[in-house]
Image (cartoon, rainbow, N blue to C red; front, top):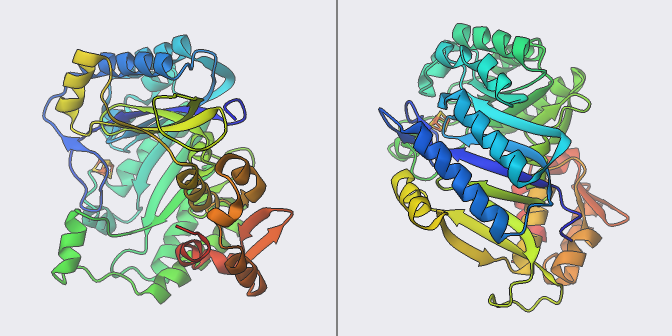
Length: 399
Ligand code: SF4
């Protein structure tokens, strides 16, 4: 199994200039950060993981610097981490190394240096081209500043992805579609277009509870989603994932690793990794195969994580052997987000008989209703099915 799955490395940089009111990521606002110390700790943790999970020979297809705001890192630090990754693992010739960036003018000045230090793909969180919406979302940049940063990014990087959030309070379909037309004209080959969701523990969620946030109705959100899919398709983008659209050959290799439930390690505060690893007899499990999928979760608080790495070489707070059933649930939940869908037989080969995790009667029923499509064990959502994806997935899984 191990040699079949693609393998990637996720690096979490947990610091931001400001906390956005919709964000539930592990992000912390600090006046100063000892970047050299954090960078070295990430390298130490990668060394520990490479050894513990026997990864030296493993080809790395992608590296992703996420956060937080990794574009606040010093480019030299990202460079040192890239060098360490290439030393510890076996980088493929076409390795994709992505950095998430915010489009402020300060960060834009560093883009060429990031490129020189090994980053070859940029994922830019523009979020809106409307200044009123940017201010509502608590972003630090204006639309004009973002467009300037994007122009610089496109000059430096061959591959630039841009992120936007829509279905905002008081946003109309017409306003969003006018903005989408401008987005489609920006010349990027990859778009991540997410609807605003209310996540636990965020400022927006507490505002909504107090009646201070007038979220769009389900009907309006659905209309915007359908129009978004249609406009992106008409512009030559393939909706390879429910919220991600790419021109030919421009899909995010790193995110495909998550959506296909492949293998990755995660280093840095709060980072999560999941990896097939040679069987460890000390961990209890009943599945017959020799390989086991291990989930690691690093300590979330940056100071605690740094202490742990300094003392033990790793900030891993939890290391669990994933049950085959849990793997199946992940593979279905993530895989049905993809236009290619899931291969039921392939999941079965890792997780055991389908009847223990998939309600095949429900699948047959939803296929008849035109919400799912199954052919030769490949199961996909239809266009209609995509509009009620979460409900459908909940109905067909045996939890
Ligand atoms: S910049 Fe990104 S990670 Fe940081 S608070 Fe805002 S949304 Fe969250």
